[in-house]
Length: 327
Image (cartoon, rainbow, N blue to C red):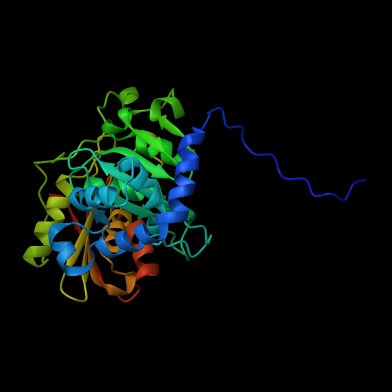
């Protein structure tokens, strides 16, 4: 019997990478990758100023174009791939220690959104946020869509393919990686279970529930207004039970998030997960949460009361949670 180590089998890649792209990326990474990474990190806005403009983890098109010109890159896709190392620094994976970065290109603005995977120790793994989900949810919070995404391998897991398929814009999504792959979502996921199966169009930015109203509450006006605004933008065509969370921070600022359902039900992005994306994107940590408020369909087919209570209890155990039902 041989004692030689045998590598475990891996899935077969049916796609051919462009060797020219890979070699160019290797050359760029070696020559200017570090310098570009330092500049991108410095340009990414965080904190109060970015929060007011909702620009956390966003590299504006004007600054991206300047980097492309200064470093003589061939275009925005070169820059997206070089930005992956910076995107990985946004990741928070204390369980796996596996850092994933993703960089999305906003359709409407040409801005780049950077994001990473987020894990929550002490809770179940279903709360985990994947890097691709971070970017798409972050774009949704800005009222934008994603037309292209760069990741370490253009091979997102099945969870991400399903979540991304909920977004109407994903039908034209392009995925790129430093290995030289450039694929469309249709090539990668040619027969998706998408919203069409249940007669829905998929997520698009905007007020999905304009007639929502809060039930009786004693929340501060600013918190109530932010909850209502977030809830009206939630994507809940299947359960008709939108959820929204507002996190009040120790410095007086607030961040928010809303639920985005999947036609497959799981993976659905819960409102507290979405709010945590907003929080991390703007440079805050869970320790900055002073209190939280949730609006949900209390007693409905989907009620976020228990899941938000559980996750918040691990993230910020001393932060009180107010729960308000929809009228």
